[in-house]
Amino acid sequence: MDWVPGILALWFNDRFLGIEWHTWKVIGWIGNILFFSRFLVQWYATERRKQVVIPQAFWWLSLSGSLVLLSYAVYRRDSVFIAGQAFSWIPYLRNLWIHRRNKAARNVCIRCSAASSHTYRFCPQCGQSLVPESASGQ
Ligand SMILES: [Zn+2]
Image 1 (tube, rainbow, N blue to C red):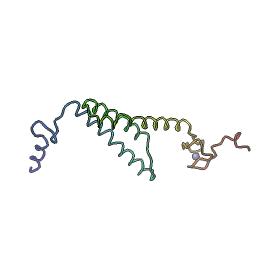
Image 2 (image 1 turned 90 degrees about the vertical axis):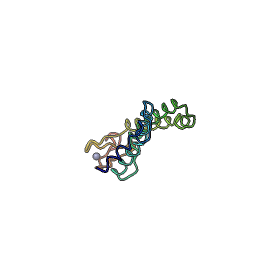
Image 3 (image 1 turned 90 degrees about the horizontal axis):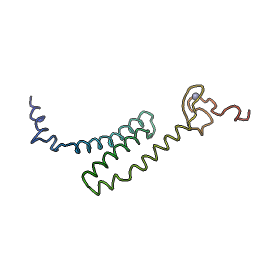
Image 4 (image 1 turned 180 degrees about the vertical axis):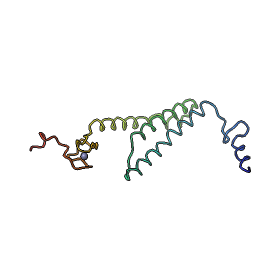
């Protein structure tokens, strides 16, 4: 039971963790959580594929986190914070656009259904030719 005073210390003087909570504080923390979670998503994707990968979810979390943080910064009228978030959405949107364009231009292998770049001539999974026979010159 010696952990009880530690738990009670989290809530002290109507503050949790020493922070006075209100709606905008919650919005700011949601922005922080969204923005931070992009690193976890990117790390997981990289460990899973054993190569550096930046999944589309990374850019969505970056965009949503930065917009929520921007709204909090505007509420706080903090020029440094506003300047830091005001233009970060531009590369996030650009990278989402590029993801979308690349996804639309992918080939799907007729043998194994693996998706690959439209520039590949052979499936990287099974070696199936991705070039239509009429275009291969045979
Ligand atoms: Zn294949």
